[in-house]
Length: 334
Image (cartoon, rainbow, N blue to C red; front, side, top):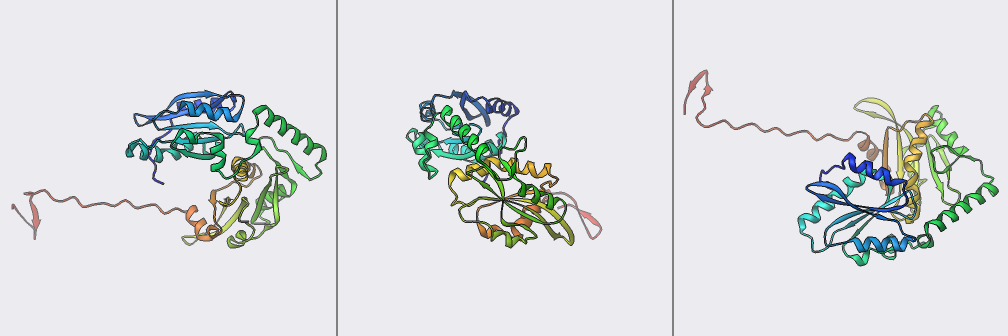
């Protein structure tokens, strides 16, 4: 998509960082003023997700606006993009082309969903959950109830879990010993590929069955499922312009058919898994995102590794009328 070219100022970045851990803030209101992103308001969190959405709806006027709103998962955010039908076409285009710039500037890894609306009636928890195709009872709980439920599940896992996995500081999920062994083998050059899945029940990063070894690009696709995301760390040996090279590629496969909450889970952990790779000696040279199986091929990866630079076109400057020219060694005037 064409972007507007607007950049998020350091002031806005710092303000967003300040509210990331402040759960008292539910949303940050951002508008485009004089061709710049400006924070034009904030909203305090209420006692329930339903009420949080209601207060956003009350704040909406007839002007286009972005609401950077806290998701049910406290550390994640939703980008609400409100543009009323009465807006001029130019305004609609400016806001539409600036959405990705705002997300990238704030850190796209913080966001789990975009929600485009044009009426206040669409700005409700019910309409939002319907739009992502799944209504979950977790969305109807208060923040305290969610935290209590998560604490209970973690307690049960620590008591009854027998799987062999470890916790690593800074990584929000547990890492199976098989996953750590797979990364170590890639680092040592014993294998080229390791395919990982997140277990949504235990929140453990696991290696897919038979998903480690010396696999080619096309073979990787055979491990992917039509409704389940995956991560793949792939030491890709190839040739580029006649030179042999090996690049560590991190493939994030997220099919459209995956459940929204599963997409959110994988998206929220992806950056941490890339960091884990680096700490285990496997520095990622390129991150690639795919949503369709036919994209899993060598050509797609090579194009991402070595994007073609568009050559600048030069035009010959026309001569000025009346200027002297040299013809056969003689000068003359028109």
